[in-house]
Length: 158
Image (cartoon, rainbow, N blue to C red; front, side):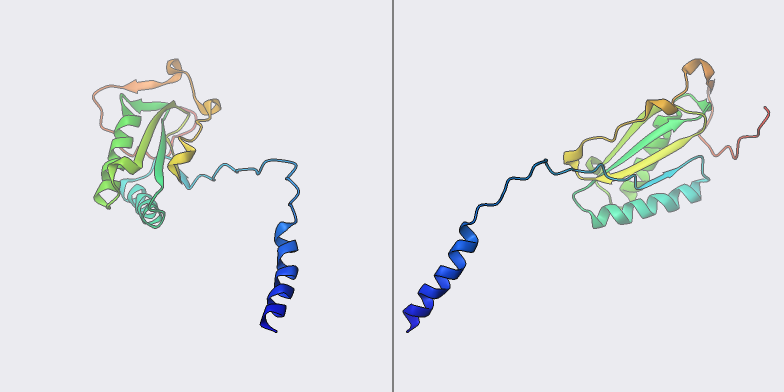
């Protein structure tokens, strides 16, 4: 009797497993991950609050890489994007994020300071930088011997 149940069970399950699946017509679409955050010229405390949220999320996604893409503004210190990148990296490291999980990129200049953040797996590589927001070096007022600081909102008409 048990062998009869075994045969009946096998006859019901095997055809379901053995039926070949039709190949999909199109390959699966892998969507580009959304940007995690973006900000402009912020006061240090406001920037640190944003970086705290990034650190918390990166700890939850423990295999992810933090990508910071930094544009200096139309009025900028020499090396401003680099200084902002290093400052953010150092802050995130103090919050417990290993340095190999933090990648920052100097993306050139735009009308205003812009920091864009992605947190994603290393297999995806670096985010693509939109060249359409860049301005030419000739349009930038580059200050020398200045400190990277919050400049406040840009006044119109200057």
